[in-house]
Image (cartoon, rainbow over the protein chains, first blue to last red):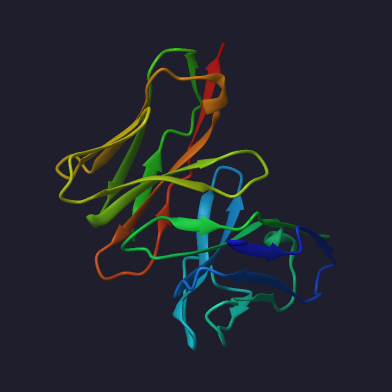
Length: 112
Length: 112
C-alpha cells in the first residue's frame, strides 16, 4: 500500500496564479483533510471531507477550494495565490473515531 | 473554539532519562486524544491513541496518560535515546465531530 500520496513535493507560484495540490489514498478511508503548517502555529485544518461528495470547512478555509468526487482523491485548489499562503501543506486520511491520521509527505509551497 | 496547548519551548534531556511532554486542552472534552511524532521535512506519524475512559496506555517505551478532570494528557518516553529526538504533537477528536485538532508540538532533544 502506498498510503497517502501528495504531489508535488515543492512548488513556487507567483502571486495571483492558481494551482491544485493533489492527494490520493489507497486505504479506503472516508475521512480526508488538508492542513497547513507554519512555524509556531502547528497544524491548522483547511478543509476536510467525510466521504465522496461531502466537504466542510476547517479553521482557515479562505483562499482554498476542495472537492471529493471519489473516495481516493481529495485535491486542494488555490484560487489566486497570495504570499500569505506560503506554507507546508499536508494531506491526511484516517478514521478519526477509531485510529490515528495517516499523513502524506507534504508539499512545500512558496508564493512570491 | 477548541484550544490545545503544548509547551513551545524545546525539552532537552540526557539519554537514558524519561522525557515527559504535556498537552492541555480547553473548552470541549475529547473522545480520543492522540500523539504523533514529526521529523523535520516529514509528515506526522501516529504513535498512540487514548480514549476518554482510559487513564493510561502503553506501547513499548511510550506511555500516555489522560486526565479529563485536569484536561491534560502526559506523554512519556522512558529510557530515551537520541533517535527519539523529534517534535511530538498531540491531537484530539471530539465526540460526533469528524475532525482532528492538533497542538503546535513540543520539540524533544535527547543528548547522548
